[in-house]
Image 1: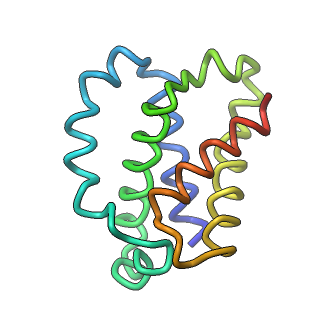
Image 2: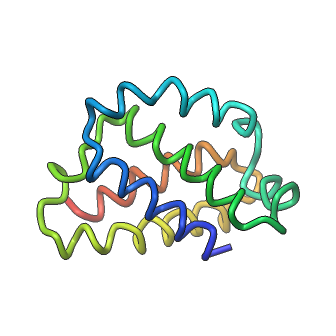
Length: 125
């Protein structure tokens, strides 16, 4: 499960680090449409449904992380200016997501991802 979240974290952080918010505005409708079929899943049910397909789980988490970053209007470069700290974002996100899902496997995955995003950036304040 950790490998799935690590791939997701890297992709989401990469997009918002190098893509910028303007580009994010242009693709957010497509991202929401792509994530919508999975919004009903919990931490546990996503693994029940797609646990054998790490790439699929990673893609779903990535989409949800992108939406969370967008909704929270987080610009990774502005929030975490130090390059070494940005390198640690992925690990922190994975840890926070795993904690949220371990604490409550019935929690909506969308909520767990959003919580992980929030807690990740609090750790870098």
